[in-house]
Amino acid sequence: MPMYNPKIESMKADEIRKLQEERMVKMVRYAYERVPMYKKRFQEKGIGPDDIKSLEDVHKVPFTLKNDLRDHYPYGILAVPVTEVVRFHASSGTTGTPTVVSYTKHDMDVWTNNMARAYACAGATPNDIVQNAYGYGLFTGGLGFHYGAERLGCAVVPTATGNTKRQLQMMKDFQTTVLCCTPSYATFLGEAAKKAGMDPLKDLSLKVGMFGAEPWSNEQRKHIQDTLGLRAIDNYGMSELYGPGVAVECEHQNGLHIWGDEFYVETIDPDTGEVLEPGKKGEMVITMLTREAMPLLRYRTKDICVINWEECECGRSHPKIMRITGRSDDMLIIGGVNVFPSQIESVLLDTPGIGDQYQIIVDRALLDSLYVKVEVAPEAWNAPGFNKDALAKKVGENLTAVLTLRAKVELMEPGALPRTEGKAKRVIDLRKE
Ligand code: DLL
Image (cartoon, rainbow, N blue to C red; front, side):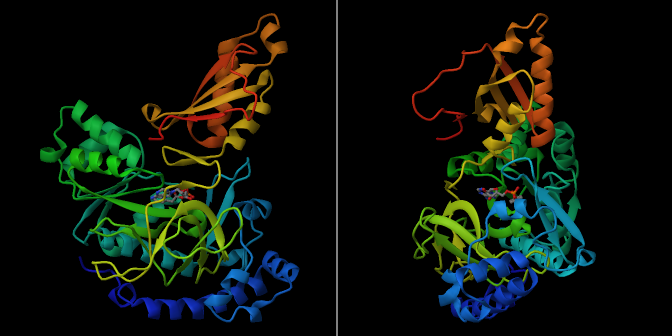
């Protein structure tokens, strides 16, 4: 498959390392000089930018955490005047405060190029018709996949998420060849097509699926490929790292190429912070090498994976990350939306009449919705005129407002949820195989 930028994509590993080293040294100085948080962190460690002379020194650089973004909400990590920002996106923080990310014109260009590379890597060409069923808005999926496809020269159909019937109709009528959405929505689309009497293998023209934003398995991949008749490609990214387009599989579907000229990737032991050898499973830590608006040094993604520097059959020598196998924190991804149990808890605690015992149930059958069982506070339960349905509706609305996710709420009598002697089991994730 032709590369979008062969000069960069076919660089050899040692050339990539050299470029990474030059860019890393520059980026550390840039962040130190422009972001007070970084200057403070370096000074606390008793080091300065001069101590980072090569990639061997990177382990000395302090980590950045999601909470740092929350603590500096909204503009604290900006390294440029806000007038140079051309785009903001935001994703869920671990509590109510969102994580804001910002982009200069240069950053938008890098992101869009990364996405164009991703499409070409997956096997898309300028002749393709791309149906983009990721959410448009603050979530980076919609606009990221949109502009990347345009840059490659494809025709984009910006359907966004939902409205499945219309989605399928357009896919058929427009003869869509590339589908972009979460793997769970791809599965749902396949089932919905069959229910509507369509034979996706005959009626649709799909060739490539650009799937990501949530964990998925090889079995799920096989099922989607067999149902929709396309090559299902894994796409990894996160809002803090521009959005999608950080790493993508090629036609060999054997690990995701992470663009080494833009991202310096390490894996660490999540407990000790110690850097691990390539090939050892650990938490992925990424430094963006040319980000202008919001430099992030050694950002702890909390995603668990393995790095592999072996050259791929496709001719790319950029490092690969093998499929994400989990997270080192408790973040859940429901229908592509990131949810922290702590956010759910704070909504429940803030709703008058609600007790302090709850359970979060996540199941594939519920697709993109959340199911919460929660006890009513005894005073409210016993109050004359207590209206259970009205309270359940209120809790559901509050959860949806904060999480941007449909929520089904079941109110329980005080004491009805099981008590455990140890840690309460708050999350029941029925999706885990
Ligand atoms: O999910 C960006 C994106 C959009 C990626 C569309 C791919 C496609 P966030 O909402 O910030 O950004 O969520 C980032 O989602 O830390 C992972 O835990 C998870 N994630 C993303 N892609 C994958 C994947 C977007 N391919 C968080 N496999 C990340 C497993 C993934 N987990």
